[in-house]
Amino acid sequence: MLGVAAFVFVLAIGPFFGLRAYARRVEAMNSPIEDRLHRLNRVQQAAGFGLPALALLGVYAFGLLDRATAPVETAGPDLFGVAVLEFAVRVLLTFAIVAVPLVSMALGTYPTVRALRETGASAWRRVRRVLTVLTIAIAIAVVGIGAFLALGSAVSVSRLGLVVTLCILVVAGFGLSPYLLVLTRDHVPLEGQRRERIERLCAKAGYSPQGISLLEGESTKTANALVAGSLPGRRYVFLTDHLLAACDDDELQAILAHEFGHVAGRHLWQRGALTGAVVGVWALIAPQFGSGWFESTFSVVGLLMGLYVLYRVVLLGALARWQEFQADAYAARTVGREATIAALETLADANDVRLEAGFLYSLATHHPPIADRIAALRNGVDGERSRTPSSD
Image (tube, rainbow, N blue to C red; front, side, top):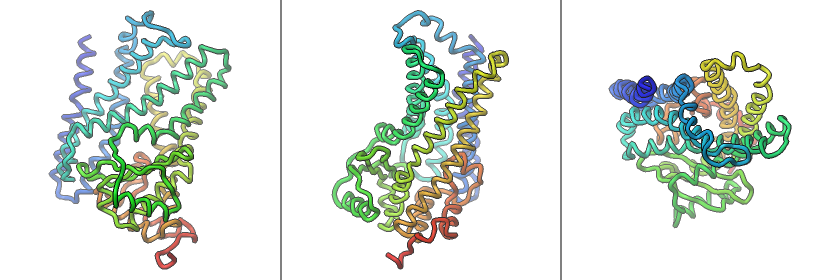
């Protein structure tokens, strides 16, 4: 028991003190702000993969899930053959053990981010964002796994049928994720002249949203836009106030067109299809390996985390990277090449983003460097249909 307490304690304070020390070194460097933020972001990306893996290794090494569920294995109701209380304990414990080091990391690095960018947002706002993203990911996984288990217990379905059902749920989770994200973020309807401005720019881009809302971005100096448009007839635009202040009309129209390009290209559905395929293949082939070597705790968790990195960085990262270029091309065709380039440059300045970054970093973040995106536009990747300002 003492070992478990020590592990949780280190997991809670280790990332804070370690990353706080590194962040202070970064803050003291004599280099541009965007370069220092880039250094910090690279470490956060690596820690974002490594810390949850370490946490899960500890969970299985100490048998925390079995210990926590032992008192409730025979308690509580069953739903479609699933022990609800035991399942809930496993989910909550997994969520908590993964959230602890991520929150610790956020608290350790955010003071430096706030100082470098001179923002006014509290540390709690950053923590809430981390917990929100993690909650959505866990919720999607719970729905998929829960439905998979329930379907298998309630009716006689072949393994292939169960896998297909799970894949459908995964794809749906990705497609609907913008709506889930919006439900968890503070937003208000955009009113007055600012709303008229967005409606006019959307109309020029050939897009007619059902609603336009404002996301608070001044306190965090975040210039960003989001379009929830996976469902026909349910298309909504969300923008931060910092974005509205940072961009002129041409730049803002290009940014909106970029987001519309993701919708037109069904990019979220593509990511869902990729994820569903990965999950389906794993569910079909995993039982073929047998359970002998599978009994090793570190083999199980190590393999799963390795596969997750392969999926998240290599497969999904490559797809997302390509999709960003495609959305830029859509914006260039719709609004014009120079306006799209100007919008990218404005976003980089407004968000203190480094123009150049490594290829591996772009895979991990699912976004190509701004410099690569601008170069692609200038080199004609968007095709001859891309308009220039003189053709408007």
